[in-house]
Image (cartoon, rainbow, N blue to C red; front, side, top):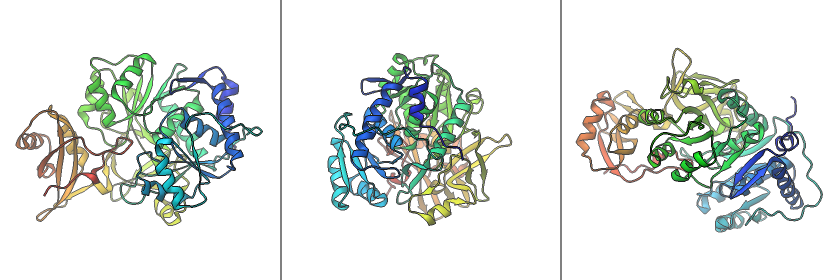
Length: 477
């Protein structure tokens, strides 16, 4: 298999003065980014990091994170991104699972890092207070990457059990970036806004696509609807990746239409309420839905931009090189060059997930006659009411059309007659009666899909990537 060239080294040679990264008040060209990554790589090597070593990273989005990713790739060490929202025992569990050579952390995460070091003596800690690297000892020269070599071990969200570390290779990332570029097109004036967490595959993928395609990446430390709205104008952003809740908050924070230079808002993270997509379209924000997983190095299915309005609610067709099919029990199966190599130190889980090359996603979906995928639910979220399948996203989409509803989440409760019943948890912007919302649902849904009751609550629980945590919704008494 043909080796892959060091992406940053290529960019620094081919387009040295092109803008590469804007983060934390810094604007770096590819030449400058490579020079700083080179120094950090040399410092890491002096600290004992070698090819194939795992290095855990517990940093917020920003310049230091991007620089560390580039430095680790220069050494061909393996990145292990850790969620900065993890409690100390959760982080220690992941550290114990992969046993990294080094843990790089932010000062704000010092206590979490110390807990991991206490649990696993010998773990080297590096508190990275700023971007300055230790004095380099020699140069960490760029080398070609084996496409099958692991670039990162990214832990799944663990909403259905213990997280597992998906091993993503250089070939996985390359295939994902190429497929995305073919789908979205490659414009010389593109600028990508990164607001997704870089410890999730969605955020990491944007940084790597930027390096591969020569697209400058503008990094925000966290999602702030007002800051994103302003950046779309001031930084002339053309591409932004969001999840449904971020899109909802962005639409609420901004009045009027969106600037014409924003050519794609790439939307992932699960099913999206139809009214949200319709509002974005009406206000000139081109939303391109997609579907992907940690295990597929981000998206494997997406709508092309020209079909975004004609197929609202669909996730799209497989991107180049990928195939999808639906199993007999409705599960989405994926096959292609962006599918992970397996789970780190989990041979049995790897064998179960990768059946003859097909990845079992755990998601339920359907494919129409035109090959368009529609994602219906996570398998674990599916509600079976008296033998009928109820998909939470359908109820949530119906409720989203009510003017008093900000957001809703649907989960199952035990029902003595039907086995299970859906309950809707609603965050409302104005007082509204439960009977009114139930009547609203009856007008739009089959009787068996109507919630058994409405529970009014505040903002719904979400993970760091903005995905709804249905298993954290509190069941009513």
